[in-house]
Image (cartoon, rainbow, N blue to C red):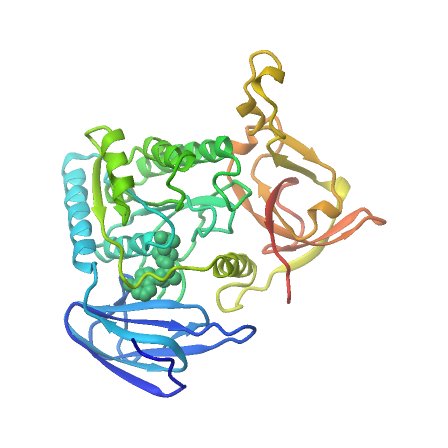
Length: 426
Ligand code: ADP
């Protein structure tokens, strides 16, 4: 393995079917930059093709693989933690999965049916999100318009942590950012742990599944392209039951199991024969994240929501009177079934709206701005317009200051309290 290098230039000549893996150093409070250029041949990063002689920038914490099918020369400038060429990659297997999905898409076009719904499951840090990206990028490069569903409430790619969402993918993801976001469909869950409230998690998954299926039916191109679903890395106990629930809610046709044979065997046992379950190895390049790097990346995700990937967004900050909004959280402390009113289960409590009195308890929290206009509507089954973050609370004036991607006023006044917190350092 390569040792840390100083900020010199490095050139790599890659044989066909190999990849250059590198990580950008992550020293505390310092932002390192690495510049990558393709000098000759062809190469791609997680399914997105590189343009020759174009500089691509990567920042502290980035973990990247530049893969080539036919060989290439790459140039790397800046401080990398590691940078080495790997000959063993699972890319041929991933390409075969793409080819099989393409066959299904062609069949769906010919028969006028919906395209394949594939979900990716496996423990944390096995490359689930990366495989989603690769399959989505290959699909759009093959002129498809697949739907990307992200159900990972901890490290999701669509909105802030604590949410699940779906979006139509119309072009490959940017090399140093995610998929471009036009009107993603987002549901509030409010916690980065899918196990914190399983009843709520399953309810929002069901809602997102229904709306996603509706959207597919109304868009022929998307309908034949199908969907790629990313899931959480929680695969044991209730986590496993959540996976079964997701498969059912999204009518999954294919389940791709990364890395864990036990999970694969359980799914083969429990899934109907109509669902194809496939085992895939993880890439040796996938980097295990520490709990600190998980927290950092969640924080980065929220910052990106308000400020953009390149600090190119300018969020607004304004005061909101307590009396102008209603804040709710979802889920009351659970009581045993025997203490519940007749005909209610303890589970119902977990999806109940509970009014929150505005005050210091909401400071630094994210608030989801619901599309629902009143509690009479089914609030938890309604998607959200976006998020604000409470940056100050003034008890004397009975106001709070919020950071918001949109100027005042708030589009709706029904707000849902998220457990996710964010300290705005700007
Ligand atoms: P999961 O979704 O299973 O938690 P990810 O797909 O997010 O895992 O991958 C974890 C990290 O590993 C990410 O930072 C990703 O960029 C990196 N990674 C994935 N594949 C490779 C690879 N082949 N080489 C280097 N880094 C990789």
